[in-house]
Image 1 (cartoon, rainbow, N blue to C red):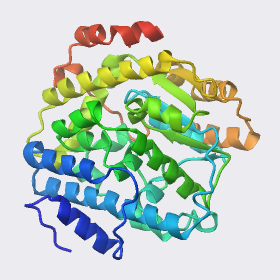
Image 2: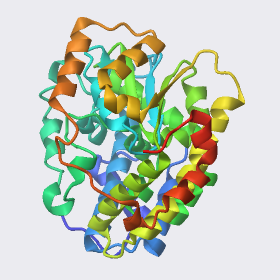
Image 3: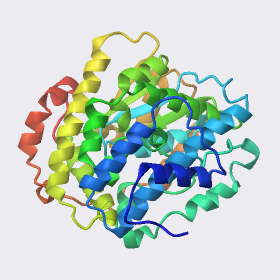
Length: 391
């Protein structure tokens, strides 16, 4: 299939996506085209894309558009989807690089848990089924999309292991609404991210997120959803409106560590699609954005009582010192039954995934122009609120 690497345009994306989806053209309720248009415009004006970046960004837009068409069509054809109830879902939120990914993977090992897996998020239509959940041909289809990461993204697995049957983040699922901070992580699209940060309506994002969980659950359910992304801080109030009985693990760490590590991750990812990535600009841009959204999340949480929701604050040093002990505290806080099968599966995963298994993610604040004292000063309200210590 040929790719037009010169032009990124909304009409072209919609037309090609419809062709790939077998002629489907109903994008359903809620905004989609506005976010797509803003993303396209920001890519064109600010993305500094190379040819690979144009292809990757075009394919990402097409994938999310095709997926949305599939979700909407499946909901028309399979009435059991709309009948699904989502009860007491567990969400892991917090700053990047605070242990959220490994915690998500551990909790997902419990046979009673249901986490979105990478392959089903990438190719959601038709709804996955229990009988073929381990053998679905989409698993291989998903695996085939991963580049040779050692060539394109050296060291990436040390930061964020990936695979078709590993857990996937809600920030990727949000792509089906074209309202997600993921895009500004992968590409330089500051004006798009400005819209995400200050103008975008997050209600439709969580309405569609709820529909996505119903979709995945309809034919392959568990006792509880286990979900994860720091992007939930952008829409925490809408999350709590959509899931008033949510169980939320809020992860915390010295912000110097999380900001520097996230700057490193973003720099590595963006360099695949651009030859003009400035690590200092990346850090300066994201630190300000993350500070604002983190403080906003704290304000939302403190602003009023959420009688049916439960929050649990998890501190990165505690998690690193004894992962299973922290998991047990989470189960206690949320009144979840700890079965022997669940404990055995989670312990086995922890034993099989010691720190550094996939390599060591090495970075230093100096590489990104990060001054630890300045960051700790800017994040002082957060540090003091949760009593965080320097690492």
